[in-house]
Length: 263
DNA sequence: CTAGATGTTAAGGT
DNA sequence: CACCTTAACATCTA
View: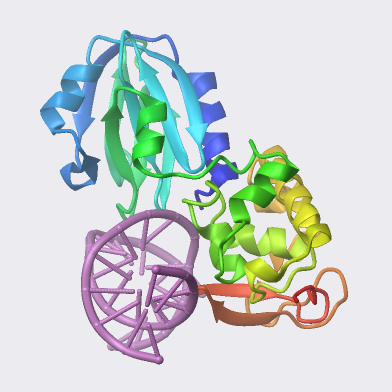
């Protein structure tokens, strides 16, 4: 479920496993996922070089290749990384595999292939060209308020809009709204300063706690909404049934009693 | 067999 | 123009 916390965990995983090793071979097995780069160019850019550092912005992960260029990974709905030693092969749904000189492999796995693989010269230029908003964890309270200012849609749609703030998806937007007691159907423009302040605080708290929990459901705080997504679940705060609705085009869980803040 | 699933984007409607 | 919903992408699972 790659939203900001998941991608941050992938970043740390890659940092801990795959930096500073010579790339001996590259296998591109999903040409359709390549964006703005040919299979041949990607292989040439990686082969014989090393991964040197990583950057994350929202749901995008960038990996610098010595001496120049950055590999860009977007994880779509089902993307993930796997670092492993077994020679025998290819984990199913591997779309890009790097073979390191030490015998290990780094695989980018993506069942549904909604993710993307690219090569960029300049990360900041890429972010600007995509009109991506600031990373959700980089915003202070004033920046958060400024980012949301002027958006007339519903708060759920605004928070999920990557051009406004980068990193929140369906799951964590629900979690942030739940933490701040805000009705997901509320209009963004009518939220008062106190509510915006609490939404900002909730965004940081939720994302940081999710990263700390390593995005493993079992380790999430019991007070979170996430473990309770599903039919017939109850609000972990008030014990009443959660409501499931379609808001901003996505399945939304919220507590009608505990998330009253609106206009 | 069908419906729905974490993301993004284009297209069409109000 | 601003906003909303739907469909599409590819595949798996309940």
